[in-house]
Length: 233
Length: 233
DNA sequence: CTTGGAAAGAAAATAGATTTTAATTTGACC
DNA sequence: GGTCAAATTAAAATCTATTTTCTTTCCAAG
Image (cartoon, rainbow over all chains, first blue to last red; front, side):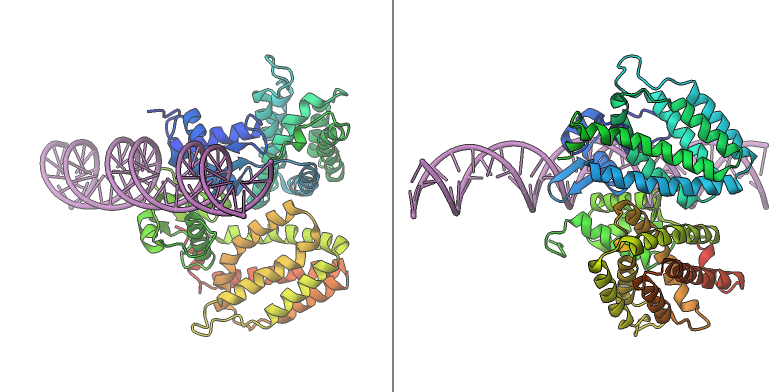
């Protein structure tokens, strides 16, 4: 009876574990996902895995090729460019709305999330070339808290889709950062401008923040040091 | 061997039929979806239906309540308000980009889609209170063609999610239109401004177009003529 | 007459078996 | 020696059976 958490269905846990593996690139972009293998690895049955993969397909983290199975969604330079541009649009839109209409509860959550992020180290102590799982979580919570005050469930939902997509690129980006980047400062400045209700400045800082992560990967790709982006298929 | 179309898997056809039924409100918002019933109706087995429902869950057309099955996603006044606002943001964003960078092929497709829509009648000849299926299809193709030139797969994907959501509200809106609305004129004017590359005017017209559909439903709800919006649950 | 609890029934979740489809390899014919 | 086709194998897609979970009803106690 491999019920990990009480209240969670087997399919749900399979879904969550697969999703985490995809976001962390433990299942690499473009990689073929053999259902039987996943069953064995997760200790659940075909049905559960198929259902989880179906949901991930609709989310865009997995692609299904009819009659030929599933594979982890590929990544590419073009996709990263497009994704970054789309994210900047949606994230700044949400941020401006949050700044315009966010309440004290929102500010409170933001300060809390930022504090937690600032006290979490980005690199895995065991393997300094990997992103530490607690940091990834704190980082996600910070960016979510930043825009949570926007008041639009639909915009936040779209934002979450794009955030999840870029998570995979972010994991590949960290080990490539040649010039050590002052992420903590970026996060603090964005928060400060936001709490000061300076929408233009906050949006500009957030745009630069998103752009920089993308640029690190694109630079690495250009200088041919990084075969990762070609791994799709 | 209930394979409807060649090349399409059983799950795929089940998914498409369920999706069409949800968009057309033949499966009403908030309605409980008993898997066994759907199996019988679609002539396929549990697995296929579950897989289809999982995908629809990720799309937001179905909600899953763990251990208690699935139901058609509910609708509400608050959701319609939020959805409309989000759609206006995304659709106008895509439209402005398309106007800025769309090529002749895009213009060509738009003119073609508009022509088809203009020659299709909106009301079902059999039941004038229902939206005719060919019109729904042509309408969707027109709005897709309008923004297709935007060049961003991700923005278009987000747009498609929101369009599908509002499809359900649109189906409920038509029979309520008290003052007969000149939809054909609205569609033509939007296209004309777009082809004239007048971004501000096109965006304003599109905004008014989306706003009006929403307003018709909200008015009807307010004057208590419409129990449909309360049907969620 | 109301309320709490237990048992029976219904429905969802999961597992495992079966069928279908695609890829690969081998053999025969050109 | 090369190419096409048939057979074999592996994997995905589908179906059926089983288990688990929830809901409803009925009975007893307060």
